[in-house]
Image 1 (cartoon, rainbow, N blue to C red):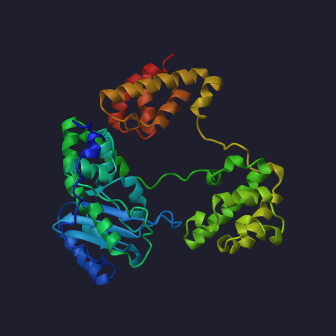
Image 2 (image 1 turned 90 degrees about the horizontal axis):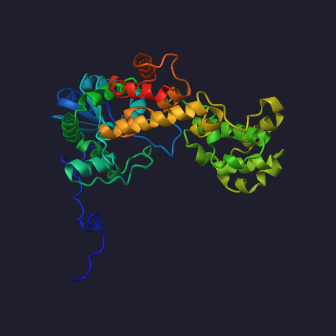
Image 3 (image 1 turned 120 degrees about the vertical axis):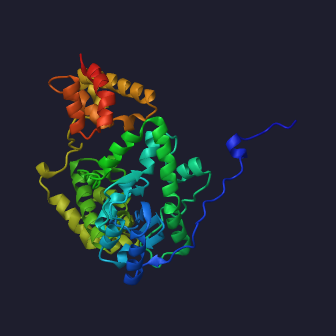
Length: 408
């Protein structure tokens, strides 16, 4: 008998592709079509599936360039938010119906920008994490629950393109095609696992989500910045990064298309003092960077003129505790507390079939280990967790064990 090769997964036949159940609807970009769909949506029933497409990698902003909506009794709507001042009428048509989103934190900020605000929601990705599923991307959930494949080939497309190609529109419509069915199947699993209330508390917390807080000193994320030697060079990197950021925001273009990070570092290392020297750098050979030659020269001049005490430090100032790798030397007692706390979180997570990071925020655990409450008991540790954003179900599961971990 010939030896079999390949894993069972490799030998399995491909799954059937998810198909649209209705004809692909036209893009809604006129007032008449918009009013008509809002009326139809208001007459629908049950929760509303929503998704949004941005142009990350192409545009500076994170605005929505397409909003997909689907509701039983209303069908799918592909709304072009660029064609309207806002989508407040759509928000009113949804009313207090539950939203169904996948990875809600990605879409809530850009939907809020156009006037869409949920009063209740169900996040299929977050629910999948609470169920400790091995993969929680939308395509993986569709495969797991429906036995269908969902192609994601247009996820990184430039959705600011107009007109939008039909294959992209089909891809966008499919993203909300089965969200309602998926939500119901996932909710049933949450009920069976005794986690529905946990999910409800997590979903409630998402209603106030407005976006991740802006990172301090974003210029330090310049790729390859570790190769910048000296505070003066870092000052030039900062000045060039900030100049690029202003240009990118004004032109609504992703910064890397204005001037790549590698080019920022090269200009900073060379520190050209005149236009001729800057123009002759290899990074200026292409037309794109040369268009803003004067802005780069002004940024270099600004960086070179900074007094020494205004130059950035070689390491970033951080709020809160330092990275844990430094604790053993700087604060061994805190390092011991952190080890015990992490062990407790891992143990509880395994008991309840949860990813540790969904049981409790790792940042909260680090903060408690570094600087515990003056009184280490369930009440004070629970209060600290709640103040840090932990939900009641999380506090109930971890507070007592963290008290033990934090107690000398």
